Amino acid sequence: MIKDKSKNHGFWLIIACIWVLSIFQISAQPMNDIRILRHQGVPMKDGVVLYADVYLPEKTGKYPTLVVRTPYGVQRPGMHETMVKFAQRGYAVVLQDVRGRYESEGVWEPFRDEASDGYETIEWAAAQAWSNGRVGTQGGSYLGHNQWAAASERPPHLVAIFPILASTNIYANWWGMGGAFRLSFNYGWGVVRMPNKIMLPQYWHTAAFMPENKKYENILMHLPLKDGDLQSAGHEVPHYRDWIEHQSYDSYWKKISDEERFDRIEVPTHTLGGWFDIFVMGTINGYVGMKNHGANEEARRGTRMIIGPWGHGSSQSFGGVDFTPDAERDYFELQLRFYDYHLKGINNGLAEEKPVELFYMGVNQWRNEDDWPIPGTDYKNLYITSGGSANSVRGDGRLTFEKPAQSNSDNYRYDPDQPVPTIGGNNCCGTPTLSGPRDQRPLERREDVLVYTSDFLEEPITIAGPVKMVLNAQTDGPDTDWMIKLIDVHPDGYAMPVSEGILRARFREGLDKMKLLKPGQQYQYEITLTGTANVFKPGHRIRIDITSSNFPQFDRNPNTGEDLGASEKVRVANQTIYHGGANASYLVLPTVPGFGE
Image (cartoon, rainbow, N blue to C red; front, top):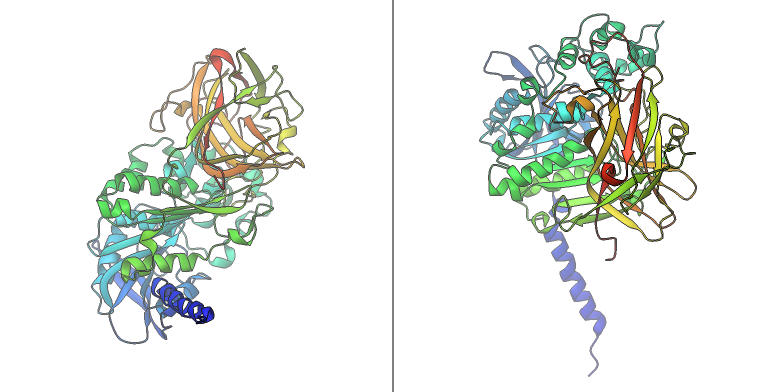
């Protein structure tokens, strides 16, 4: 008897469909009609009332609840549409203006009240008749920081958080990097866009605030930095002046640092970021910090991370590079699946998946990983070397995995009045500079940029993880900056940056330890670069650029040794980079197995 195999195939196809639907129940959930409760007062313990809009399914009931706290206004374009989508899928959503912003009472002071106000808002939401007492938090950027801050206060009804594109240390991965001040961002966001006055959305563009007789780039050149707020705002902006005054990682910053309090966070977290986002180190540090220091096993095991080839938002193309349609991810669906698992208890397969998902540039592919750093990472030293003339791409700077036996050095002059301009990199939000993987060749023609390039690769080199530069150098003044970029040079010459880092020399012993240099003395510096994942393909070359400025992304170090913001003048610095022999300088590359291995 001949069996009808097509019927068997049909049977197993039906079984497979049933299994898929049972795993991915998101698609099977009904779409609710919704209702909105406007201008709901949420009292804080100090008497200040914060106001929120509450989005609810139309049907009366108790629902898992999301708390979203924003300084940008609850009516900001895009916010309403997202909250509607969550309510349609069975969530109550509390969308609140933070203290001192828009409809909420109180005084706006960035970061300072978000932990306590977030705690009280979460507990208020859990007690409402429309909440089932299970609360999650939602939002990106400043809203993501708000999630970390509130979670560290351990609200009893908080179940899970999903900070997107968010800082975890306002000093180390918002205010600055390596002790260098993120001038264009801090000024564009803190003075122009978010002063202590409410600015309407139509005026958020930086140019709208500029006096007619001044250009933004000229304002950022103004010295001293400490009164830079007067150049555009026309008045003192207290938080900007506080940021300038607190130039090191002191108690002012530690009090609001999420990285000081990972061991207080008791709930699963999901971070999401972009390789070119200004807060990518917050995305990474949030995952690693919770994995290693979360308050309990549930929090440690439940932490997850996704990083794509993005800036401050998901896209297929960024910085002039098309990363293919696979690069885009639906933020809403990623969040919904996480919340459905933790707040609704839907078994959608999330727990069985690897906790880390990375987009590998170069081959433009996603890959799931067991952890970060990736287990089994082989850290290889990539040494710089030259015949003493590595200045510009025309020089003789080279890279090699073999440690050069002979010591040598390269020299350049850093003139703060002629800084190396920002082209691409990790920047965003209220600044005139373009971020992302933009071609570095215009900068590499400068004599104050040292360029070290490998031979053409015969085999692919895959990297993923933390990147660090060990640099032996000296300067003739009491302070200066060291700026490092890791670059993937394509066969056509396009120089694509994949990681960058900067260190203000006075912070060489730690961001909470300031110590000026002895002019003319050689020091060894360890410079942290942004994490990355990239495949350097055959026919490509690896390149390292070294210089002392990246303006206006970072403020110009005046080389005088004065406190941040105090200098009214600058001095030219004569820089020496040592390499080879006992003075080896090298980049530490986190190499991992390639695709298909």
